[in-house]
Amino acid sequence: MRRSLRVCRLRLRGGFLNNLKTAGVNDAAADIAYGIGQANTNGDFGTGPAGELAYVATHAALGCAASAAEGTGCAGGALGATASSAFTSLIPNPTGSNGNPTSFSTEEVAGLTGASMLLGAMAAGLAGANPLGGQRRLRTRL
Image 1 (tube, rainbow, N blue to C red):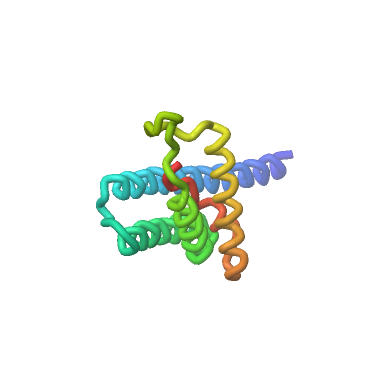
Image 2 (cartoon, helix red, strand yellow; image 1 turned 120 degrees about the horizontal axis):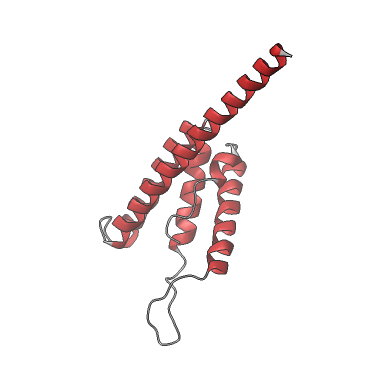
């Protein structure tokens, strides 16, 4: 009985610490991705193709770092972040019927997030990288 409790306690501790690490990495990556999005909105990356490339490359670097920290490898995270940030940058900002800016609805955010996750996983998987690393790096500007 004592031995099985010890084994159970060790398993829980390892899972808990791994989940805590993953949550910390995800929270930090989300905060940094938000900052990247704000910098892009403020025009800090510039305009035109060079600005867009800098924006996507910054997300790729973040995706690589976060995915490597989670143990899913740099390549999958970088590819997933590249694919999802390029995808979301092509989506125009929503406007109301009068042309004024609005926000995406909950359903629209869910649909775009799902599409972005799928695209990131497919990009990573097709390139031979870890699809789990690719699907987690998303929601860069929604």
